[in-house]
Image (tube, rainbow, N blue to C red; front, top):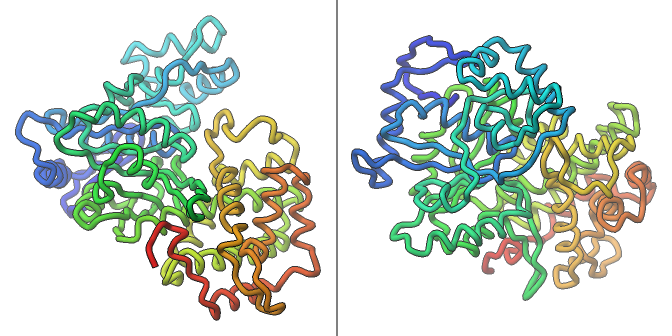
Length: 466
C-alpha cells in the first residue's frame, strides 16, 4: 500500500497487514500532483496501468491501496487483454491460496465472488485472467493476493483520457500497443505523463548501431515528448514489495515530473529517489537480465555450488562493467544501482529462475520466452540485442594485447555463450560451464582494467550525439 511520509501516523491495519498513514499526508501529496497537472475540482486524476504482469499489477495495487479511497480526486485502472483462460491446475492452486487467507476469503464472500472459484476448482467453470485481476489476483503471481482492481479490457476506453499511464509491458510488446494507443490520442490537447516499468531492450543496427529502450519506443510510437516519459526501476521483487518488504527505486527523467512523482510514490517501505539519467538506468535494467539467466543455469548445473556461482558472478560483473564503459561517460555512478539490481535478480528474479529450469530440463527453448505463471522472460531478447549490438564492426576497439581491432563482444565470453545457447541454439545450457572453465578466458580483473584505461565510450549506442 502506498502511504505518506508524514510523521502523523494512525495505526489502522488493512486486511493485508499493511499500515496506513493519516489521510491528511496522503491527500496532500495527491492534491499537489493534481495541482501540477492542472486538475480542477470534480475532475479526477486518471491513472492507468497498461499491462498486468507482476510488477505492473503490484504498482497499480499499491496506488489503489494508497489513493483509491479518494474517489472524487483520483481514478486508478489497469488494462489487460481479455480472453486468457486459467487452466484447471492454476484454478486449484488459487483455491488453496484463497482458503489459506481468511481476509481474502471473507472479502470474496462479501463481494459474492467466492462461488466461481469453487466451481473452477471443481472444473465446472473457466476463469479468465481479467476477472481474477478484478478480484485481486495476478495470473503471474497467484500466491500474493492484491487488493481488488478496476480492470478495463478495451484499450481505447482505458487510455484515451488518461493523465498518467504506467507502462508495465515487456519491451517486445511496447511498440505494438503504444502505436495503437497513439491513434486514441490524436485529438488530445495535452499529452499524458508516462512512467515505464519495463526493463527490456531492443537493438537497432541501421543507420548506425544503437540500443532502443521502452521509453524511446513509446516516444516514437506516440509522439509524447521525452520530457513527459519517465522510467522507474530498482532492485525489487514485486510480491515482496506488496508484502511490505523494504525496497527502493529510482524514477528517472525530466526534473519537472520526476521530483513530484517521486514524492507521490514514496512511502516508508518503498523509497523512491529521482535521477536525470533516464536511458542509461533503463539500459542497465535490461543488461542485468542477460546475466541472470546464466546465473540460474550455473546454480542448477553445479547443485547450488557457492564457489561456482561466485566464479560466474566475478565474470558476469566484469562484463557488465566493461559494457557500461561503452554506454556511459561516467560508468562509476551506475555501479551501485546495477549491482544491486543484478543481485536481487540472481537471488529471486524470473530470469534466473528461467535459467535454472532450462538447465534442469524442466523447460525447453521451444516453449518460447513467455512462461505460464511467470510472464515474459525479458533476458532472452536482451541477450540477442546486446550480442548483435556489440558484434558490429563499426564499434570495434583495439585488443589490449594483440593490438588489433575487435568487436566489443569478443571480450564478453559469457554474453557470447548465452547467445549461442539461447538464440542460435548451438549448445545446450551445460555449455555455460565450459565458458567459465575456459583456460584462455581473461581474468575478470583484466577486463575491468581494460575498460578503465581505454577510451571506449560510444555515445551513439544510446542515441546520444558526440
